[in-house]
Length: 195
Image (cartoon, rainbow, N blue to C red):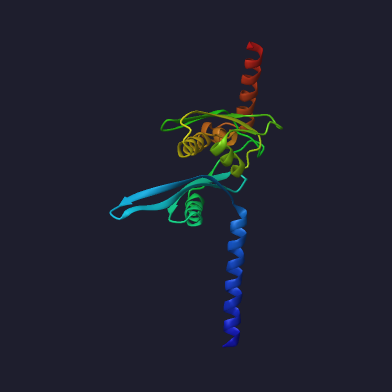
C-alpha cells in the first residue's frame, strides 16, 4: 500500500515538471489591456480585456484575447487561447522572412520586408511583440491604416501566414530547391541592373 502511494506521488511530480518545462518553452508578451464596462440595472460592472502574443522564438506564434474581472485572470485566459492558436511560420536562416509580404485585417494593413543581418526589428508596438516571440531578428515592418492593436496583430499574422519557403514552393511546383533559389538570385540581379 505504501509503495503504491509513493509511485503515485512520483508520477504526479513528473507531470508537474513537464508542465513547467512547457511553460518555459513559450515566451508571452502582453500587447494591450483594456478596461471594459458592462452597464447593468444597478450601475456598471467593470472588467478587463487582454491581448497576448505567445511564441517559442523558433518559428511558432499565436495570439489570444481574454476577458475577466481581474487583470491576471484576463492575461491567463488570453495566454491559453494564444497557445491553442499557434501557427508555424517558415523563416530564412532562422532570423528573417523569406520574402516581402502584405497583410490586412479590417482597416489594419501591414507591410513586412525581409532584411539583411544586423538590421534588427524595425517595427512598432504590437508588430514588434509578434516578431520577438516568433524569433525574427531582422525585419522592417510598417503599419498603414488602423493603429488598433487587435487589427494590427491580426494583419501581421495574416501577412506571416502568406510566407512560403523555397522548399514548400519547390514541392508545389515539382522542382528542386536549387532551381527556385537560382531564379530568386537571377531576379535580384536583374532588379539591380535595371536600377
